[in-house]
Length: 90
Image (cartoon, rainbow, N blue to C red; front, side):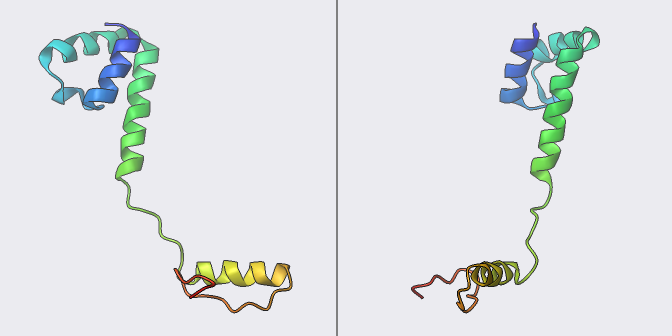
């Protein structure tokens, strides 16, 4: 197995090698023993998986209103701040 094939398998099967079929996992494990590039790919895939599994980041309450008010002040527009999701036509 080469690094390119290993990368394709990570994309298809995921970064948890214990879930790979034996005929793919064993060559992958051998490759990892001698390839810094393969190890870097596996580490990157694990970091990506952790980032995707993290809870979503939520904006603080009222942030949209503060942004609209600040933008209105910058251009001298006395527009009233809208509630989140409200449009100018609402």
